[in-house]
Length: 172
Image (cartoon, rainbow, N blue to C red; front, side, top):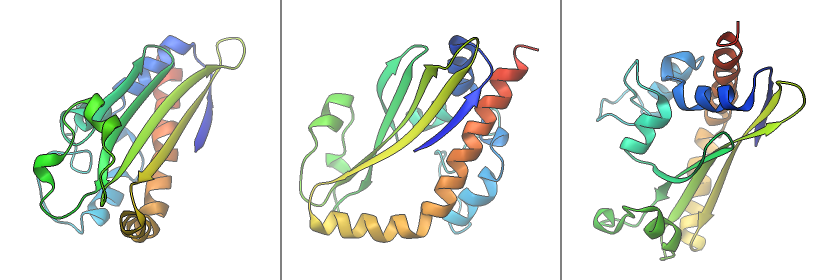
């Protein structure tokens, strides 16, 4: 869980969440390059085009939009661990994602929540939650998370900073 105070009204903060690009997030390109081990690949949240909003890229590629409550909260989800050969069984809809409860899988959600904190000020919270279906998936995810967590946490804090900068600049 990471939080930031933003001096802007809720609707402008929510617009900023939806508009931030990968290039606005400090260290994003470097950290995702390291995470990919420099390997090329298809467009994804780890290989986002320069001018497209990062959440748009995420939901077009590997994440599903699970909740979109305008001016309040966005929740996206993805499968982070799957058994070999499970590609055909991956969820294609939010309902399938929520229902997924098969051994060998772990799924993750990422949220951005906007709460009022006084006159034209909001608190933006981002949270990651992971649910592993069994001990084997938990072990696989834990090994992965130990490696990527420092960079992931930094990206999330810098993402919040980019939201703040964009939302506050829109009012000046």
